[in-house]
Length: 538
View (cartoon, one colour):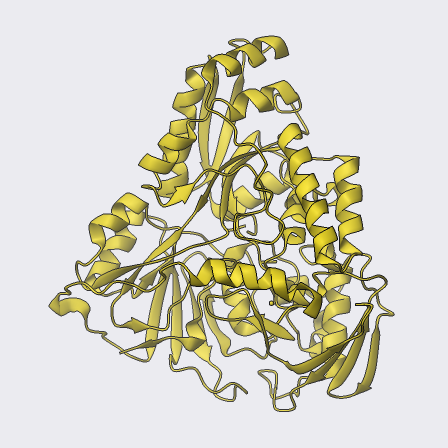
């Protein structure tokens, strides 16, 4: 969620290549190339070997199997490798630790042939045993990975032929399985972690350490201030050009902006500055605004586990009280469009027939009166600190709801506290966004809508519908993409009636970058992901 609720979980299964092509085409048609503009003398890099990146959101911890924070994912993707990966600006899967793989016709058995030159940072070879250990550990921890692998595989699903060949047998066909293996939940951990597992499977140990094989190692971490990554000299994919990456935590947007303009920072997170501020900066002080399409859905989760949003009429009044057009025009400056679905436009399975919620204050007042909340609606909107976009959005919604007699308080929380609040159900409604880790409706809908995902699984609306659960579980056992698509479209229709979320917009993503930074890309799925290992300063 980036404050994504996680905030995604590509060569896909052969039977879904057609759908995938559609996703890739959506991305390729958009202009993701920064436009060159006149730059100033301060646009030259001070140190070509070191890149400094700044974000406004803190990093809770670094266990790849135990965290649900995208700020952590950004780091763990650099520290660890996976069997397959996503690369560049497409949604295609590419080989990583697995050079090739074979899939049986029934979609129940996957044999991976591992590269022989991959090593963990301590020099230990990456083997099939390490793959087995990592998946079993992820399932035992049962946190962010549980939603993807639960009931699909278990401890008996692995057959090792030799050090570099492993077969994973599924308990039943699972259409998105290969796609899930490119996500952070499938990071491969050094089995030597077993010596430090303790009673928590090593979660505490890995919270501030790493045992990966990725392009970077963890050099240092000053909590709340800075993480330093150092290039892996012996990386099988070649040593990264950037010898060091500093990830700074800079809560104040104005401070981050000044540091970028001075060249003290080379790149800012997409969540740091508002579209209005970005427009002011473009082409000045050697800064380019890099913009790309995304599958990012901005929404408010209405917590159904307690009043007032346990009442469906209140939820319906809420979605008719929001001036979506005003938010899109004034906050996103037109770089977004209205949606009413957890599945983004451009992704396989998107239901274009799901009706958009109209801005209708009279209808909202009528619904509140019917619900017994006329001039009585009083609740809190929770947002993450130091995010201009969500703060402005919260103020706009607060003003909209005042017009129907609702009293709304806005409260900001530090990022780790915010995550704890919304996953424990301590909020009324929180504003955030969701970007999938792979381009399949299962990712968005399972986490946001399946009852087993309530809370820590990131169903932070605490939504439960037995029919939706049944359909999601059925779709997972089907390989036929046409059948899966119909199921996901039906789920979207049901959710449009239940209204667990107020879906506000699907946005583009923009980041301010010094013009000497090369190789930066935004993926439509993992919009918070930064490919440091592919970047340079020239």
